[in-house]
Length: 329
Image (cartoon, rainbow, N blue to C red; front, side, top):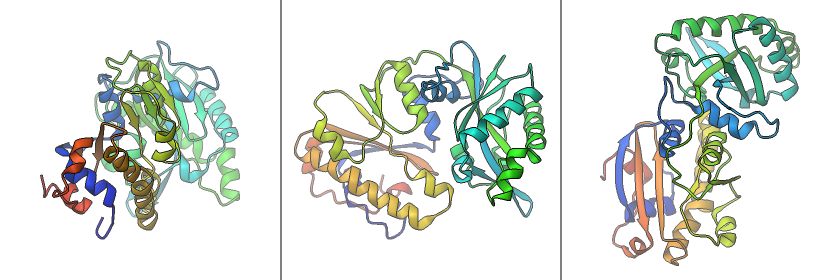
């Protein structure tokens, strides 16, 4: 973050009230904010499916589900690094062919159901008793420290190994490698559970491209819509009152690719397109408050900035790295 100029975000942080909490995966934060309790695992999959399954008419119902996202595992030294489906550019036709053969092989154990080229789901007879980590937390990293934990972890690691053997010489992968593309040589299993009614409806509207956020909004009875191009586009047409959740997660892609220049450019764009218009709207009293939940690798920073706080001109912004390190709490 050194040398990264984020004037609007740094102003919002400086003039608001700040609290910090331990680092938290975005998936868990979303589930907790809607009052969804942990089961054996944090049950992200049925809510992601609620959003992804709308086109096909598949709903979570009373079944147990688990995310089974296509990935490429690459051996580097003694470590297996995970490359997610976004980088693999998986086609839905490939997903359907792989699912057909996986379901034939594992008939009676589970059913693999791709609902998006990069997001596949397992329908299960029961939820495994284990804790997993979301794909976004592992992408671009060694999987060693992120494997499932719990009583059923060994059994499901065996399932993952069997899936890898099945995929190793699968015709889809043979064709992909012949085209110079990454093989889909594993599935990342995470977020198992059954859908439950969220215990709270914290937002009137959720603007997000993330399927979990959209699915939770739908389950809670809130409105959901794709994230607009920028805050000005939303503010210019916004007329209703109530709390709105904006999920600004575009840093995930360059982060998992370890593309530092793209990450910096993307962050500068977020500051310009989102935080600057929101800060301006606070000054103009068009909105009453902005609450930020900044989910970092070391900690989560929560900031609440009201329109009247913007008068506190003497509270000058500091580099985001200072706040992220907890040096100015």
